[in-house]
Image (cartoon, rainbow, N blue to C red; front, top):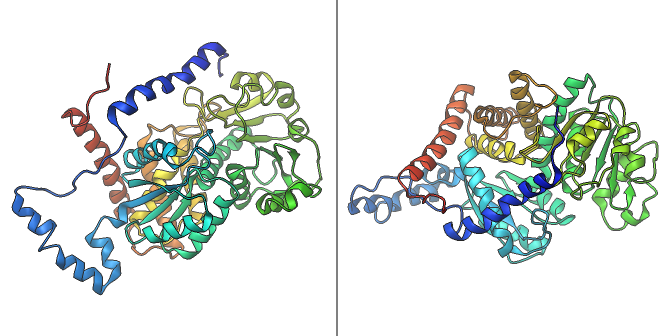
Length: 447
């Protein structure tokens, strides 16, 4: 059972990474760099890698544009695109201030998925300009990861690019959060003996994350009627005329969910709920113990705010919750986007998928859940941790197979061939990092 911990110590621990970040970032001046893939035995080799030899693959691509995937690293390049308008919990801090986050994302892509990801922070906030910029980048990149873009334009940008490009496009704040949350929920329901199609769910926060959580829950079998969503002004319902004219995505949720027409705030929304999933303002105390106590027996709590969850895990347990998940690594059941995006892109890139479909994301969630279940799930282990590297392989393989099944993959591979390809890319990335550290090409951390 989750132990009650000293709150002051927890807050101090939450602030520790901030202290080290301000020491290490200026020391390394960034977190990623470009490294060669080919041998350079002597300067004569540049006649092959550059002029005159390079003209031959150029001519081959000119004749057949798909040959770019064979002669270049396009099939492993993705762009991490942001305008800096919704960076972590910091808000609209601008593209330069968002660059450290995008570099960190690129590091995770490489280490966990073997994906070569490049930060692309744009000096525009205009949705059409962002769409145009991404289209201009597509000759180089095999995929696009949208990151930290404010709503509601993030919905529009994603849908436009998914429709108009023939490479995978993904928005981690929507698809990534939703699929990892769904993975944890699938296993939490197995432990409590409840079914997705029957549960009453309260979603606290109506931003990009929870809008997609609702979407994926419904695709996976939940009933929209049984979902209640709460924004900063209260429960969503068809009487919310303040939303109708300003946010069409939330208005659709007003019409689709909460068929009983419940009104009020978080307290009222949690009454008799089997599950609450919160991606809202950080706590402590944003969600009160007595509200959780009014949930159904065997309640499941996902308190996703960082660095402080909306309610401490032990408080939720004391209030009667059976399972509690948070976004923190020092508590059980960390719901971490890093379990999703490296593998989804790895699987999509290795079969040269033209899209990342919602079905591929649901498949990824099921693969994550299945991996944990095979290891034996219980109340404090409903989802794998970041160090369980075989999970990333299994998830990527499942995603690639789904893309082939849906007919959107340019490349057809057997399950075994795909597994070998996925595994080799991930292992290679981690070996390279260890080698660079061992040989002090990457300097040791400063004292």
